Image (cartoon, rainbow, N blue to C red; front, side, top):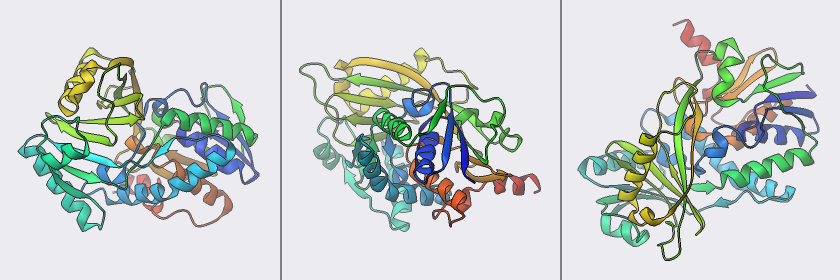
Length: 357
């Protein structure tokens, strides 16, 4: 297979196009707005498989950790192409506000320790020593191995790297599969419209996200990614240096609606105020809503659907995290090599199996 068509210009499609083009193959990428549209542009940038982990999702954790190991090399290769994607290694701090939240952290910590993952339980006082701007937290969980990336720097870096590797961009929306030796479907929440096997397997999950900037005299953003559950709703704060804070994320079923709602903004700001009270004086610089690509079981769909058509979709909250392992898997499929560890569990063949149960 020497000619590849990639449908989708988010982080998965761009990473795949770049990695494949580096092997000398001809690559064409189809997207009406590559690097700028879709969930990747609005992502928080967390590369945090450990703090996303939960009992019953071991395959998701395994695949996420395999991709996390590949991230430093992936970022280094991008830097060699001429653009720094903004990879940061400040780790994640998960905080609890009441006994129910603390119980959640106990379960998470126990699960991670049983898997041999590094995670340190903290008292509320120790958590505040780590992040002095925190509100009245009861306890915390520090995961030092988590990374974060500036999603917009990353998308620009990937776009530029694709251009340097002579990837052809077709700025159009695909209604039917392009003619090519191989096709990779990486159109996020819209991928289900491109192949019958994915029609009921990929669904849009709406999420709102805010960006804020500290004004003069304000406490700077936290130095770690901070995650919490406030009144049953998950929330995260991801710093972008001292100049910006990304706040997310609501998540609910709303079809393909991408309108920002007053309720979503209010929930995010009220939750974030409890986590980091100083942000109430920040300038609100952006509100937006995007659509993640959800799968049936939290795992993405990675592998051949039929006759040279490959799925690379359904990454849910983990698109940025899993970009390296997904792109490397596509290269392995095309080369006839063994794909990365953890990708076998994500094969779309499981859709056939469930249909015959």
